[in-house]
Image 1: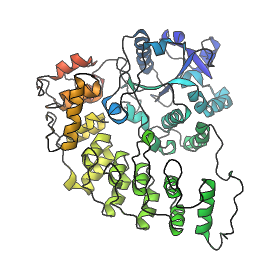
Image 2: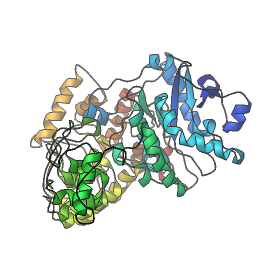
Image 3: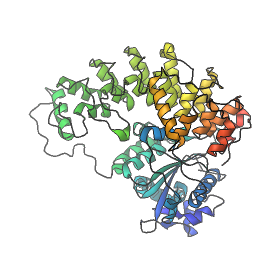
Length: 535
């Protein structure tokens, strides 16, 4: 694969396409003996050009220089520590251990019309390039697309090609680091939480034909041949013209290594669990007719995908946006109110993955909307936490009795809030200066925050800092603590007070100083709110 040596990239002041860099001798064919590759995943600023004014790449240059020199470090977002614990963070030594070589599409893939064949070959090899890259860097500075939208992690995650790159990274290797760069001085470690439910084919593509092309890359990401119809020696006496359900069931069991519909594999999954992932209503119907349990669940947690033990089939379908499977399960009389080991049901699972259609389906099936997911979180707060505005709107429409805006901004900012969600909640009359309180009667959350606050005294982190300062915190304070600087800018532009103190007597300015947040607390006009912080 063609890459740019780091020392050449750091000297750039403008962007040049592959052909010009190749002619100038600025590209090299990477192999592991040279050092480490860094794959840059980003969103183009226009259909024709990735970064016309060198805005994105300037942020990347500064971030890499600071990481290499030790002027800044990759931090662990509170929500990632909450889900996965304290993961190892890359240090300056990791960036200096070997020479670095950047893979960036405009540099590494032929761009001219004369090189269409070479370009297609390079595009088809992207999963391979990602597998060779020790670092996977998501470059998402708040710059403006030609359509006027300010780019963000959310806009990146909508793109089909970006989803494909993320999926390829998750499947390609377990070592190395996945890093997000929004602000150059504050890179963060990121994971693929929820990413396995974001299918590339369901993402956005500037060219619709690319949607079909992306599907061809999935087997490449697995670095193996697809197994469908390749498992040998399938034989059955079932005549498909007489018993189509039985034939389909037998073939599915054979191809997936099962002897019966009741069998489970080493991961604790039965055949019907895998059938739900295929989103094939007829397959589910066939399995149920052949004695598969429509109320089955997994018997072991799958932590890397954040799937708890005892996850009902309906919840599994909602998690992966497999709504045809969900309808088939309901038609087969699946228990709509079945819960998992964390107390959640299909509604909470669907909300967590932004599956607004499932909200409608489950409400029509009279699901219980009052369940609480550990450590005591209701459906509306879960929707705010995962920051999907259409899902929040669906809950407001179908379950108005379950909507409570109190601390909705806080919950969102602790988890995955973005500018769109904060703006929506403000327009819905959420209190911009509300101060957080978690009473003892909220036992789960109270005990968790109490434990983390105590831990802060002996082993501090961003998560323990949040817990230590949560009482009396405003949305602005939480946006600073969680490094959601675009949200902080919007809150400031919308009139958030900077003089309020939390229960420990700290103001937002104190938190900016203590966390080193690269943000000014001077209000900016709303039209520029996303750009108040520097690179």
